[in-house]
Image (tube, rainbow, N blue to C red; front, side, top):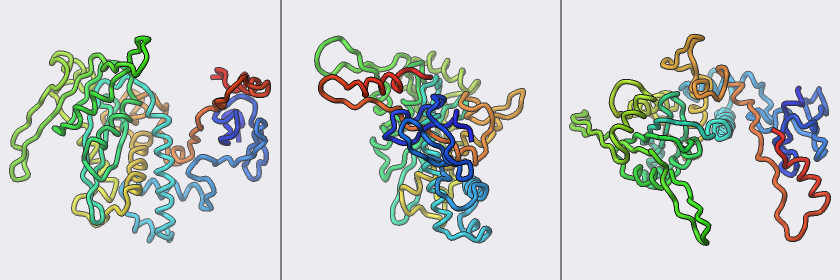
Length: 366
């Protein structure tokens, strides 16, 4: 138990989410509980992780989630370990929520993406069909974002592009997709910044400079690809070729990397398997499974094409997010800090007590 690396998870505490400020102490080594001297609340060491208030050992839960994240059927887990199916499904839900929190905290941070590829997967659901849209960074093979929707429409693509926007710096960017027309409008409307001219009213939105859009349209005949058309929608051919070579080397405009990622998701998530019997019952369950598989792929799976002198790398290591290959237990036990406290908005002058809180906890403490 290390109080210097622990933060207060209490949302009513002005010191929430901050580490190394001297406000955390050990309350009980036996029960593994900390205490915050700012709000005088105690909390468990597993608060904010997938292991919070679980009676089963962390080793067992991590092993089960590892098997499920690599395509092991849930029924096989039930037979092998003797747990109830609802118990295992609850662990998957916890892992999905934890994976989403880790993904949003670590991956959805601005960085130079270079080239992004996006595609959708058609998923069978009991009595219906849903769509899963995925996006990845080509150079590091990092899975950036995913969205699940019952319709393959503008709302699905816009939600995906908004998540990609949170991962991107305003640098030269190439977005490669299939022929779905919604991508063009979603990319153009998402990657814009307001231009403040000092006038009243809504500021004008200006698109990013050197934003390129390319599409790969495949035509089929009797379930076989007979023609591939490559289109440059936005950007010059020279700029598109420069961005493509920086991220993938030799070759042509393609969506091969995101299609390979689709194959990984189909292999590891039972409800994505073609002609399978493991249909998704709820969209939320499918989304949680997507985050379990995606975060295990990002943080815990060395990639064959990311070899360096020291050995293989995970996509998170190649992107500079982590310095080693995580275990699934590290992923499930990673504490995601809540957003920092902000002083409440009120009319009039702030009180002296509020001023002291603002001076103590709203400064730049690193």
